[in-house]
Image (cartoon, rainbow, N blue to C red):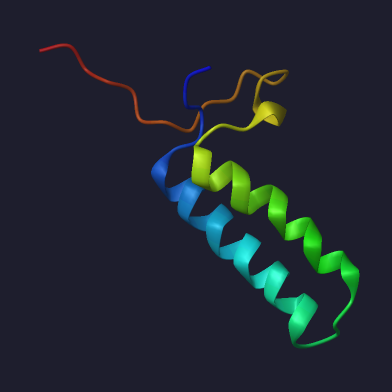
Amino acid sequence: MGKNVGSIDRILRIIVGVVLIALVFVGPQTPWGWIGIVPLFTGLIGWCSAYIPFGLNTCAKKQDA
């Protein structure tokens, strides 16, 4: 299982995840904020299973020297 989530994508996922989880404690305080665990987890590990069926990969391509 290689990484398929690039650095900008990872940063955005982590931010969105933290914001959604924070909504559980502040703001509307609904349990829906726990859905933020998904983008947070995928951002931290750098791999998203939803990308596989679509053949997506946001990692930068390595160039041969």
